Image (cartoon, rainbow, N blue to C red; front, top):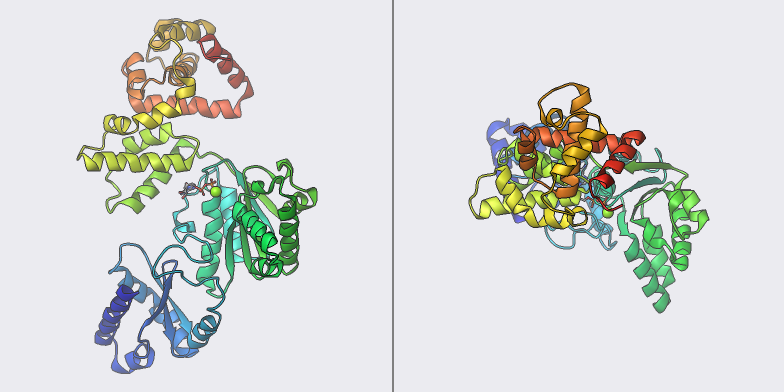
Length: 457
Ligand code: ADP
Ligand code: MG
């Protein structure tokens, strides 16, 4: 907190130097310290609501600009009235919303304040989920209740859910937000039932304004916890308290969870998050890079593209790969090149592809033969630069198969095809990956080819 106090003193001094004396005395003189700093908001207490209104209307932008001159991570001022501050202090015995220690990220809300809408990168795969989450955050309990977000692991469900909590808290410090991992809930229930402290248990959950229940699939098979969760759900829903739920699958496919619960999950709005496209993944990397370094241009686009092309099904892994490349090149003072990135990621790539490792490593010429005869073209045309569709598609398929079966580097694949650029290879493989998802016939063809070329069925 100390730093922010000092910053506020400096800003105040600047204000004093630049504003008319009367104006300064009326508006800012009485604001002596920083009330608290939460979720990148710096709270100041205005002496009365008139002053609060005046600052909000006329000075806030300027104050924020001054504030951020002193900081690397963007912060904003929030002006609250004395009454609001007093009310909050009187509630401080309530566990929620009170920082555990200083400027730590973790609050008893369970939220991580790094998960914000600002740093969630939106694309086709998550747009609906994102838009729904913002609407829920804007109008808790009104727009859709519950909001049910589902998708595979590592695609941003927890991140998005926490954005809702953080956003709501930013707008109203008095909201009682609780982020709840479902497995913790089950443990907590176990403890309560051992100690027979059900009242405390129920109170903790039923008193919240916003309940964020993460990974609800863990309730499977836990009948007692399901019953407890059902009661809490009913209570909150009846009182128009917002509930957000995440899961690894649609509510209708939840396994071993009582149907009166799963059917309620469908009362509100269900949205899914899918795997991001290559371009989307590159944007995510750029955003993560921005957060990691002061120089967002540090890693060239083509290297980011390379990383994004490999880690295509899990944003957490994608992020991990970026950090690894950053660390590797920084630690050894290497340039950020594709070759160095490939070296840094060698182990990750190997373990990732272990299941489709080459069967008879190196003998990929048969692939060229098999694919060209399948599409009734010559191997020479397959390897040529001819741009007609008749050749381009089989060429892309071949590149895809070489990657799948032999895990050749993009560079190496490019060399086989008349020294094509690695980015052409990446693009080609991505095209086929997309086709596989959207076109059944093509998928059947390519699956057949993969097996012909040696993939174990
Ligand atoms: P899930 O809960 O679906 O398993 P998480 O929310 O934990 O996934 O996300 C895994 C990591 O990926 C987190 O670090 C998160 O910030 C990041 N992430 C996922 N999707 C995005 C996105 N669209 N924009 C930015 N970061 C993302
Ligand atoms: Mg999660």
